[in-house]
Image 1 (cartoon, rainbow over the protein chains, first blue to last red):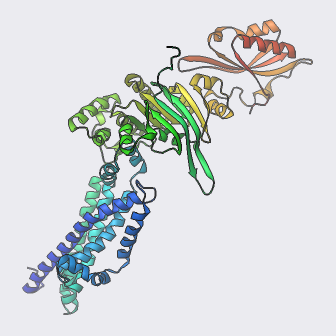
Image 2 (tube, each protein chain N blue to C red; image 1 turned 45 degrees about the vertical axis):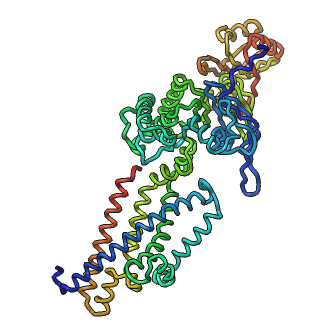
Image 3 (cartoon, one colour; image 1 turned 90 degrees about the horizontal axis):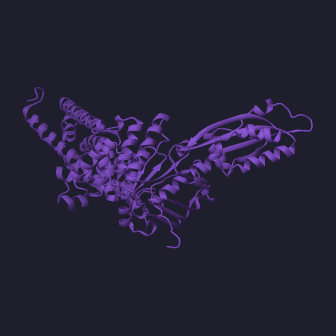
Length: 221
Length: 354
């Protein structure tokens, strides 16, 4: 299928591409699902927020920072018991999803928080003056108003996940990065490495363009 | 009934205090403020920035909670309500903001419907209400526009329609025209007045512009350093300001009575006579009488008109004139007393008015 590669390698490449897609989007889905509520919680409990509460805000902030400051390759190994608990195994693509999701969540929480902070305080005051509840303010004011920033944060996280997933080979997660290392580097097949890099470039480029398009679509400023 | 207490006030603020802690030194944003706003009136609060007027306005719907004092709106004591009841009460108080505070992700119609959505009003009803409000603020054509596509005046019209969506009896305006150009300001002010008349609203507004007060307010309170220093009918406060700060505010709109440099050009008094500068305020029935020539004839004075203006506040005309009176001191004093007896307000102003 790819003229400069032996057919067997083409199959491997397709499998690896699927694994990369799974790890990237799987990690992003978990990160969004956990990250958005966490970011809302951090935003509302921050000093000057809708319900300032240091006892909630500080521990979560600390945990997020701790995950963010651990290099991903170390995080993957360090949380193996947790991975085994969640995924039932500590090797393979599914297992790799656990540390990937965790790292991506910590990453996206801060980006979401920034996006929420960009929402005009006056708009929140207006909603309070109308008698909105805190939940209504979060779901009907904060998130819709921050949507362009939220989409941009998701795009950045997806691109970051593509990079992180290349390290998943260390725990048998597979993926394009792993293929590039094993064949392109360890077996001296530069054409494999070049192909992997080319696919990744196209993939990341596509993600970024789609993200930018959606940001423009939802930006009303 | 022995004495009629009059209509119940729409808004009553009693002994409000609010302290902001800066670095060490406590700062009184509100230092014991009490005010009553009658139903159907447009009440203005003016003051420089930092005078506490914005905090005071936010106390009415408890966006800011006073440290002490009572807030009563339409007979309901807001300060004693729990969270849920307070949210209900807020729905009966519309608010308009200086920077409009519209949701950028919603269209004009979406913004107007927003308070109804929050209140759980069904969709069909919301749409019907939006259809009623759009023509009221003259935005039928802009229904599906986003705020970023509107001019400042149009945005404020959306803000007003939104504030009216849940049929409030009270409208709070937080510097509603301060971000607008003079022409648009006039448009928005007349819109506020016309909705007050049509919907029988009570309006409480804050502003730093006396022109706004002069244009639409019935009564006014002047604030300084967290206190109300003067309060009354706009006509009275404008024509007879009691406090120095009020006089400075009023002079922005009324203008200085004696233009600077004029006094220096006046001729000196003859030997044995004196020159006095008098400020005369005509308001009410005597404004039609030929007071100046009559005073001159009766008391043998030379009266030189230094400056004068005739204007109206609301529908009430008034005249303000500065006279240089030349003559014997006793005659000047008699003429002054005579004019006062006619109901004019005469004050001697210094030769060097600041």
